[in-house]
Amino acid sequence: MPHVEPDTTSPSAAASPRTPPPARAGRLPLLDVLRGVAIIGTLMTNVWIFTGPGAEVGFLNGAAGASLHTLLDDPTPGNTAESVFRFLADGKFLSLLTVLFGVGLAIQYDSALRKGLKWPGRYDRRALFLFGEGLLHFILIFAWDVLMGYAVTAYLVARLLNRSDRFRRRVMWTAAGLHLTVIGLLTFVLATAPEADGSGADDAIALYADGSYLDQVLFRLRNMAALRIEPVLSFGLLVCLFLLGVRLHRAGAFAQNTTGRALRTRMAVWGLTIGLPLNAAVSLAGPDWFLIGRYVAAPAVAIGYIGLIGALFDRVRHPGPLTHGLTALGRCALSGYVLQNLLCVLLAYGFGLGLASRLADTGPWWVMGLWAAVSLTLMAGAALWLRRFRQGPLETLQKRALSR
Image (cartoon, rainbow, N blue to C red; front, side, top):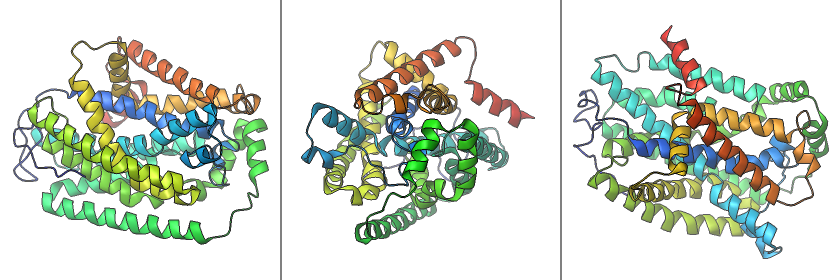
């Protein structure tokens, strides 16, 4: 991970935790692009959950799709495409989105200080509201919601922004160390435990292929403890990446200046040269190393992705439809995240169009096509929405609810 020094020229840099930052220099356009990429990137992973056997429960029942490891036995074009598609996405964009939540937290902290407001002050209500949104999202739409975990992490990390940079750095590395310990122990257990018998897999497949919407809602409620295990196991990583986002923002890593460009270049070089080989190695090692790939190697790659996307964005002189679409989606990130899951539920599950069961034996190409179609719909929809409104629908709802 590249070393980051604070940029005293950045609008968010501060001599001490409580020193108000200078007047706001304007919106950082790269952040909107990164948020848009993170939203469609998380769908690159989640689309396989929606369309796989057992859907949201398939992972817990041991259902596995293509990976670099499966290429050794089945190097067909379809399996190759799916394996590379999954490898480029799994865990990377979730980590990228987590870093960006930390950046957003730092921006709100700076805004509060400029206005002379007490911190965390009203932010506690914002975190509580986000938790409620995540809970509804989990119950009504998708079991692998990230908003609840982000809300709890943001509530805790917000209190660290009043502390010194040294203290936050210690917390960040302590959280990283605890996370590595937990993931290492779990990987050892997976590698030495007997292979799962897949009991319950048929029931899960039937639930999402033929069950009603109410059946699925009740299933998520009855199995909340198991389905909410990811943010618990990865809590150390969430804290670490939130604080890393704060640190990168204060160092000026997202600014359109020489300092920002230099930092993004270092992030791309370090993140990709370390993260990608490590991620490829654990992926080739087999499914027992899945946790190391998703929760250790993938965050390193995510740092490289931030640098790479930033470097590409720096070269854009005349933004085209893709840049405009990603920017619009980034400004409606919360609405886009929820909507993409809702669309996939309606398209893939049995109570909707049931594409997952109808196209189960047709190969991976339609799944990647579904991802592309939903992504384009989100970008186009966000661009059209922002022609008339300043924020996305859920962002507006949150703002109005909190303003009361």
